[in-house]
Image (cartoon, rainbow, N blue to C red; front, side, top):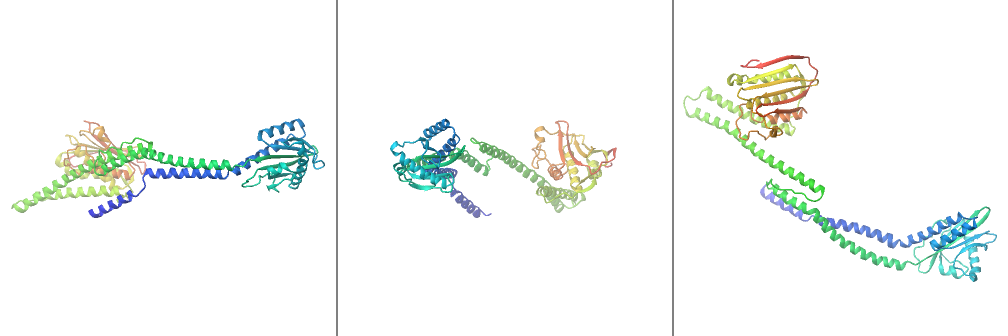
Length: 525
């Protein structure tokens, strides 16, 4: 991406971010939406449906009282007590009549405000109620005019429930005094009784109007509170996030000392810990990458300088076109080629483009074949490499990759072994696995460095020196190969006692164990 394109992208990204809502306004919108839902629910249930709930509540009182009174029919004392109790408790007018329909005027108990002069009209009214109740199957419910109900023998009905005497009439509004009438006919011990109950329905328009005023006042107060709580909550949430955002910008600019301090909620603390860990790892990776570039540059520059120098000598000085000078150029070219190949191998394994091709082969023979590569080094420089095996073991793996692992481990041991130039390769067979160990007699590795020794950028010796053999990337390649094989591997080391690198592979079959020792010295095994 060009510089102009990058600036245009950054500007467009900034514009998009600028027009997005912040936490403060989103929090406020969520709180306001919640409050509106609550207010709508209150408006519908408490204001609009108040009349419905009120009428149903009064009807339930009537029905429950009638049930309790019915249970006492036949026992005059209990009946009178039940009538008095429910009349007082629920503010009801109650009539209990006996011997209906033969004598509909035989009222045995009454709890009403009817005077003696009105009793005649009362009896006529009961006859009308009995007719409606009988016609409706023994139960009758109606919403009636309170004024007409008490002032005359007729019953003016606003709305009634013929066919379902157990349901309250669905009258929505009433502007004058109204009441709910409930009656039922019961037969007990061969006698027929009629229970009539009445309760007045107080007009609740005044109450509804009061509730409406309260509703608007409460709604306004709750929306104001939403502003306040949104500001407080958003500040509590955004303050550490803003601080983290500023630290993240510093981190993006390469300042790995950025501090992501997280104070507040558990999730913010966890995010801060994660970002601090990421910052430390990025700083470590950045330092290791710089070291890698420095080391690789050194490894590239040395052979290139030698190739150039010997080539100029051969060109400019007569008689210097000798096989020895040509061999130096060839050796340094080979070293360059190996370095490039190792870097490519490492990249291919990590990216997954180089995958293992499994086959069954003898790992014992593979180690022995690998040792033949060091004949020249042993003869010229006096190194001694021992190979101790307790039998012949076969595994299922990529033979080329495992050979590369053994080769790189031996190279590493040669580069870091002690002055005795001793390297030991050991094969140990267990019940299901074979273990290959490569040991040197060098200075060893500190416990601090052991956990990072396999890192592709890491070097125990910060002062880069040219490897005696190999490219210096061997342990990184070993780690990647063994991980794609799901093999166990590790290193055991102690300062002053050398190091032992090892790995284990599962056996393809249980071998016949024999004791064998192969010592490579002076170019022979």
